[in-house]
Image (cartoon, rainbow, N blue to C red; front, side, top):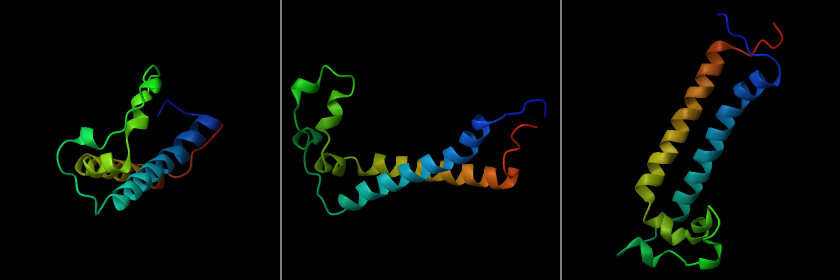
Length: 105
């Protein structure tokens, strides 16, 4: 292979991908566990809170999400958690097969 990564770039690539995927899957799993018994009747707009003073920010609507709102999003959240877990497992397997990064060679 003609392309070699050196120094901290290789270390970040080798160590970071699986860790972020594991953390994402764990966070999604925790949210799914917290909303496992919540019913989701009607429309999701009933579960959202309103914070109009924060809507000027790019992520202002993120504060509208509550655990009750996540009860309406169980299926998409489970699919996202599955994607994070598959990505983390793939990164772990790829790194295990390749071995540690050879920095500086």
